[in-house]
Image (tube, rainbow, N blue to C red; front, side):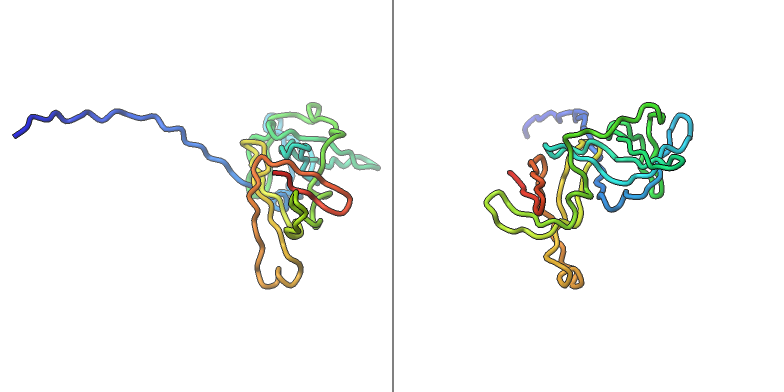
Length: 174
C-alpha cells in the first residue's frame, strides 16, 4: 500500500467574458436616453464603422424645429441596451459630430459582397457587431430574394478583417 497524499484543490480564477452580439437591423429606431439625466438624446438612425472594421458607435437623429441634426454616440458611451431602448452615460452636449472617414450600415446594406480574390459571396443583409469589443464579428449574406424565401441566409465570420466599401460592392479583405 503506497502512501499518497491527496493534493489540495487550488482555486483557479477564471475570467468570464460575456460578449453580446447585436445586429444593425435590430437596433435601428431604438430611442436613446441619458443615464444621468433621463433625457431623450435621439433615435438611432444608423451605425457607424471605421475603415478598419471597428464599430465606432450609433448615429443619432435628433429632431429640431425645422431640421434633423445627426450626432455620433460612441460605442464606449453606451451603458445598456434593452429590448426597447438604449441608455448612454453621456448628455446631449457630449455627443460628437459625425466622423468624415467612416462608413455606415445604410451605405453597405444590399450591396454585393466579394472576397479579395473577386469571388462573389452574396448580398449583405446585416452586420453582427460586438459593442464590448467594438468590432464587426460577422456578416449575414443572402443569395437573393428567392433564397430568402427558402430561409437560406449565411453568416461569414470575419472578425478583425478590413472592409472596402465601393460604389456598387463591398470587398472583404482578410
